[in-house]
Length: 147
Image (cartoon, rainbow, N blue to C red; front, side, top):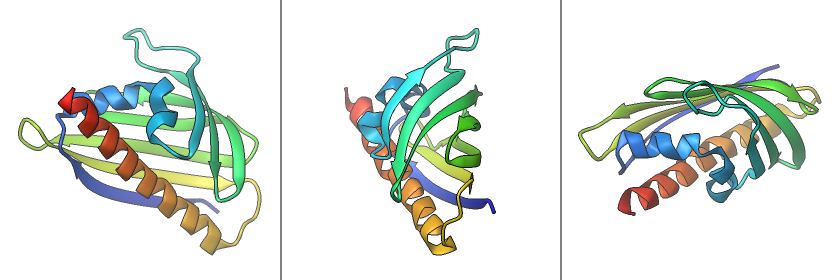
């Protein structure tokens, strides 16, 4: 059974900086504690990441995943291509500029595990993923905005 989580938050950084952080896939383990490795395998014609390989660990489950990314001016979205632990994963960050130096973020993630775990444990993992997305993306974006 697929479970979903959604979280909205603001970052004190311009939209372009937040998008730059999201496109910097190799730096993902620097700001997301769930990721131990991330590599761009192929890129789209415009240079944005297309196929990506990540190593993820959460709620005691470690997984190597291959993801497919799509991009617009304000959306970073991904879907699962291959995983040993997940049957499905769809995620996105939708960004909206709030003035010149603030960005509103809507994070959405849907995951369906291949293995059966108690629903409470899965929900805790989803909440942790959303909290990591908020805290890590916020900290990295605000740090880069000051550079």
